[in-house]
Amino acid sequence: MNDSKDPFYRYKRDIISVKHSVIFTEIENLTTIAKQLNRTDELLLKYLQVMLATQGNLSKRTLRGTFTVNQLEKLVKDFIKKYVLCGTCQNPETTINYKKGQLTCASCGAKTPVQIDGKIIKG
Ligand SMILES: [Zn+2]
Image (cartoon, rainbow, N blue to C red):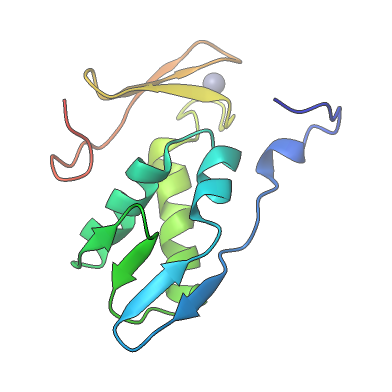
């Protein structure tokens, strides 16, 4: 997936970039960020829309409403804590099992239960 030996490469990701229209916020790099987190853009967008209590459109990468980069960045950080980082060693190289609602760490092997919100993760 990447060729860096820098142990911190895993934490590097792009900052959200948005474009506002009258009633929508387009997250221009939604797919890129989701890939960098090794999660689907669908899950990330769903998380944002549930947390912001709004509707999203995956093909257009939009959320209904105008949200700032700061608002969205804060949620992406929460998303990483909840759905990416190993609960034991904080390693982000985890895989997610949607049905069991748990993360499995590629580094230490620990299984971390994820807070399943039925609206975000379907079993
Ligand atoms: Zn771990």
